[in-house]
Length: 122
Image (cartoon, rainbow, N blue to C red; front, side, top):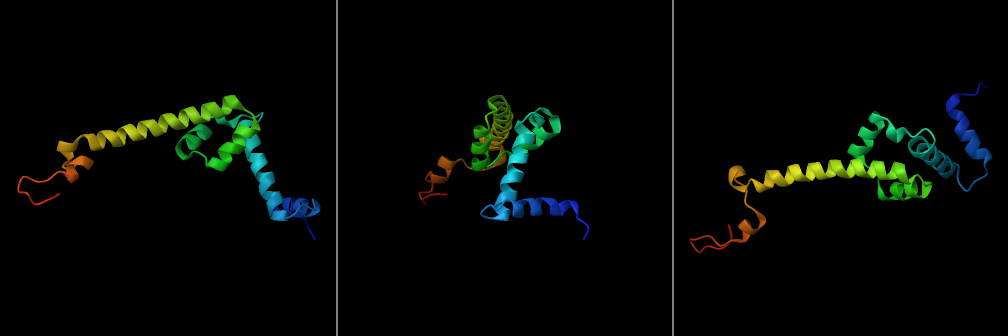
């Protein structure tokens, strides 16, 4: 039988005699991705990778793994640009809601104010 390229990781995982071949493949892929982003290739410095990580971010578990990887400079650059984007998005949302009179929306406290007719909350 001819060996296909996509079968190689499966065979390697089965030969590893680990607790589970799927867990072995998942750990291997995670380590490969960490090496790609934070390792010697430093793909976090490339603009296309940076744009995706700025937009998407990472979950708590993978942030923990990235910090355990040990590239403090790479982690700080990724966090800095991601937080800068979140701050910009938050400021845009806050500006939208601070234009209370123009947008016709009530502020949180405005919703609880009693109307002049004495009928309770608006």
